Length: 143
Image 1 (cartoon, rainbow, N blue to C red):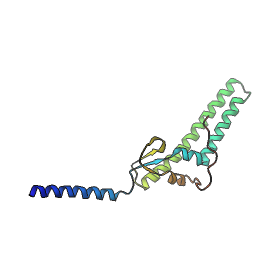
Image 2: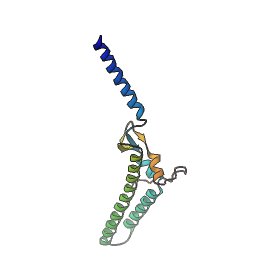
Image 3: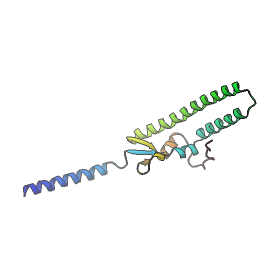
Image 4: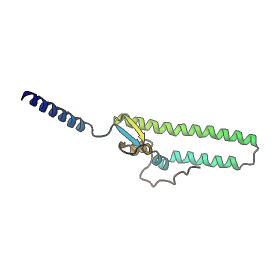
């Protein structure tokens, strides 16, 4: 009889611990961010993208010689890399601040997650000062 009582007490303790741990955590330890949504609504990203696209077209359509064109394309690539690093760091810093504030252990892109995770895209948009109330501008089109 005492072994049965101990088993029941152990099962009850485990069930209670499971319930309490479930109640203590109101959200997932994993968050997701929709990068495509950020790209479509973030004026800074859109402006950089459009400027890079316009510069690329201008270089390719210019009447300059091959050597000058190669040099211009090299400068274009360097500018592209700088701007890409800048927007990536802006997003990374915003995500890191939100993850720390909300106690997330892992943040993934929405595009890489099939199921689960708390969506913090709106929080990231607010941190990046993206006006989510306005209608989004035309999304950049990949070359």
